[in-house]
Length: 239
Image (cartoon, rainbow, N blue to C red; front, side):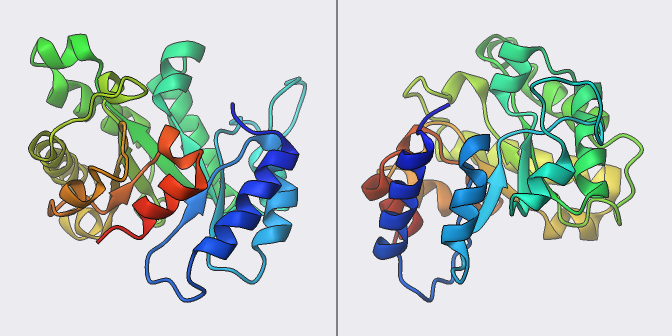
């Protein structure tokens, strides 16, 4: 919950100036709901993609304060983040609710960025893989590979979000490899091999290169470091 509409417009205007016109790396930003449409207008003619931070699972109805998949599509979104750790911990979203949101997103043509991750207590008690497997199985329950062909997965260890702590590249790779193998068991090896799996958790210009050297890490879900154009550009253009 950062940046007003005006601040978002200023951010995107500067970001467009800082990035090369031809960029081989995929870049996506996910502003707050009020900023989506004005930002989508600014992004026309660029390669920068637009996503939302959340959605409601219903198509429409008496759900005051919520936003549907159709509304996001109409605002110019191509992607939507689902199951972010803050949605799980602060707003009580369960795996079952997240599953419904993924179904709603896919049914409307939005590409879900499906977030999973363990808490510090779960990691310290040796339950990391158990938690990740449960979140994957329940989040993808009843979904066919054709329904989720554009699915992106984001591993965000809750203990490394907003804390300044970052999973070591080896810890992140271990979790990503487990996620890919688990998705393979659920959806098939070919589907798993093609998945983009992002790492999220205090990603910054200083650690992006070492994280991206890992074989199963395909990108980053950037938090605080994305709020400043200079640091975000350094992450995007890492060597």
